[in-house]
Length: 163
Image (cartoon, rainbow, N blue to C red):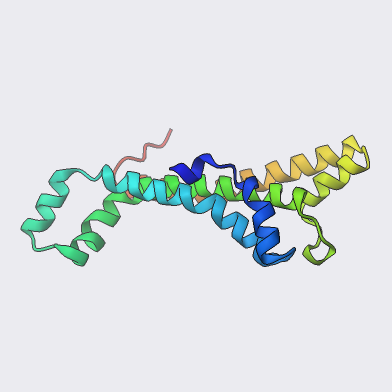
C-alpha cells in the first residue's frame, strides 16, 4: 500500500539513470506503477475469502497448496480482477507520464510523446487529439478485456444479472 501512494512518475528519473532511455526503463516504470495495485487486489481478495470456504476445503482435504489452488485463489478472483483493472489504469498512466518526461528517438512516438509534442508546438488540436486517443485506448481496454472478464466471474458465481 505504501508503494501505491508514491506516484509512478517519481520512478522515471531513477529508471532513466539506472536503465537509460530505452524500453527497459519504460517497462520498469510501468511495472512499478501496476504491481502494487495488483498485489493489493490479490491480498484484499484473499482477505475476503469467507472462513466457511476454508473450513469446508480443509474438511474435504484441500490443505496447503491444494487448498490455495482450489479454494483460496478461485474465491479471491473478484478481488484479484479488481486489482488487475486498477493495475492496468496505473500502468497506463505510468506509461503516459514516462513518455512525457523521458523522450528519446530510440523510444519512438507514443501517445504521451504526442501529447508533449502538442504542448511544445502550442497546438491545442494535437493536445486534444492525444487526450482523446489516450481516453479511447483506456475505454477500449476496459470494454474489450475487463468488462467481459468481470461478467464471466460474476456469471460463474451466479451474480450476473442482465439489465
